[in-house]
Each structure stands twice: as structure tokens, then as C-alpha cells.
Length: 384
Image 1 (tube, one colour):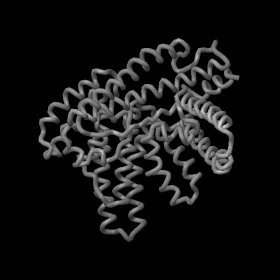
Image 2: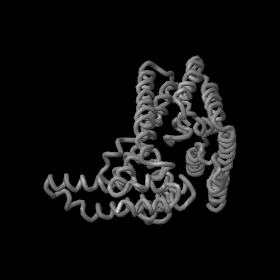
Image 3: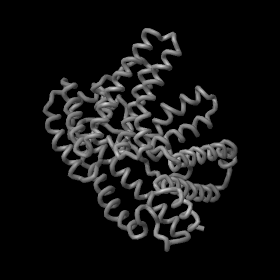
Image 4: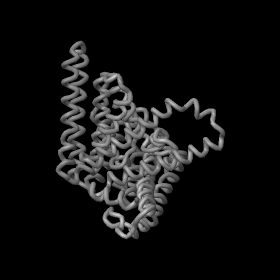
């Protein structure tokens, strides 16, 4: 959604001055103002995306009322609670999958993030019996800085306590620095440097046919670096913009290119997605399945299909889940031996682990975003 820097500045200059003038006690008015500006800018990009965001939010708000009512009045009926929850969740998720299968552009305009955040609201309502309310849900789903690229926040980000806080000089200084960081990363390093380099070696996502061997691998790594620079730049914009309103958006990256293992990678890459996976998928499936590794594998498969319904993102989920499980099994078996190794050998193993991790995650990203699987196989053959 951050297609141009002026769009980002437009949100800031339209929303911030009025927001500051609204009394801190008028929480609902502040919330409505941010919703109004956010939906306006989303509609500027896509009226359908804004309408879908509103429709999804209304469904979630109605569903959470029903879920809380069932929990309160029929708490002893597990069947009724499950029917209410899975029915509301299915109606929430299936339209996005249908749009994705139909290759409708609206399916990728931030709605996958809206669905994920909305799912968390339904899960919280079903498990705790507490409602977020229509205004909070709509702001969570539409807040412009995080609409299309995350991080994946929850309803506590826009609680009444947060909305009552007044922006201060510290927040403004922090916001300016993070927006500047985002501008440098996304619009200078990403668009003006890395994208131009990639354009010399690729066309429509396909690596030029005259390039072979280790050079192909280098371009795959460079494509993943470009993805990271853009993604972390957008996140910095979101964090910086939110700070102007006293809203703290979580960090989404922690130098993932330093990761030496797949476990460390997921502690550094798209952190909010990892936290969502743990809280709303993995731990709940562990309780149901009693098989931690199966739960972990299924969680990644589900997230792969959440990105896009198709073989490439299915294999992305299988690749990440399987790679992480293999590492955890090896760690469980050899962790004690590793601690007793000489320092030089530990460093060597760390370097090898870093290389394998970076090559694998870069390849999975390349595979997921390639035009088709034929392109993926042809590229693999050219490496060797």
C-alpha cells in the first residue's frame, strides 16, 4: 500500500493534526478519526479493498457477539461452542481463499492481514469471552500504516488506554527517525539500488537464460535481500507513523540475515507472524494433537496457504516446517556435544549453518514468488 512516499506523508498530515486536537478522553472520536482517514486512503488505492475490510469487520463484530453469548449461556455445550466458532471462522476465511483461487487482485490488497487479525479476534472471543467491539476491530483491520504489510497486531494495540495517550516530543522524534529509516531502505536502497541491479539480471521474475552456475544462486539471494529491504522498510514506516499517534507497533525484524539456524531465523524474520503462529496455531494444535512436530509442520503449511492457495506456497510451508523440524531434531540429539566442542569448530559450524539457512530460505522465497514451477525447476538445473 505504500506505493509512494507522498501517500505516507498524506496520512500523517491529514490525520495527526486533528488527532492531536481531539481531547484524550474522547477515545471513540479519536478512534473514528483514524478509521475514517485509513479507509479513505485504502479506498483511494482500491474501493473494493476498503469495502471488503468493512464487510469483514462487521462479520467479525457480529460473530464475536454470538461467540460470547454462546459461551455465557451455553458454556457447558462443547458442541455448540465449536459449531459457533468454526462456522464463523469458516465464513471469514473461505471468501479469501476463493478470491485467491480465482486470481482476483483484491485478494492480495492487504486482506490476508485483515483475515489473520480478524481470526485472532474470534479466537480470543471464543476462549476468553471478552469482546473487542466494532470500533476496535475496524481500527485494527483498517489502520493504514499496517493494512497491507503488517506487522500483525492484536486488539490490545488499539485499547482505550493507548488511545488516551497524547503524542509527545519523544514519540515524534522516534517517528521521524523510523520514517527516515524506512524511506532510505525502501525507496533508496530497495527501489533505486537493488531493484536496478536485479533488473539487469532478471525479467518478469525469471533469471536471464545466459546466467548459470553459482551466479544463479547469488541472484536468488539478492532477490531475497530485496524482499527483506522492502519489507523492513515498510515496517519502519508503519512504526514511525503510529508513533505520531502514541501507538506503539511491534518490531517485525531483528537482522534475519544474521540467523545461523532456521529456529533463529524465525526469531528474527516477520516476528509478528511467528508470534501469531505460536499463540493461535501451534500451541492450540499441540494441545489437540499431542504431537509438537506435527503441529509445527501443519502451522507452517497453513501459513503457506494463507499467503496464497497454490502448490508453490504449499511447498513454501512444507519447506520451512520440514527444515525447522529437522533442525530441532538435530539440536535435541547433539546440543550437549556441541557445547563441548572447541571454539574454532563452533565458529565453523555456525558459518556453515548460516550459509545453509540463508540459501534455503532464499530459495523457498524464490520458489514461492516464481511465475510457475517449471521456472523453479529450470532455475535449479542451471545452478548445477
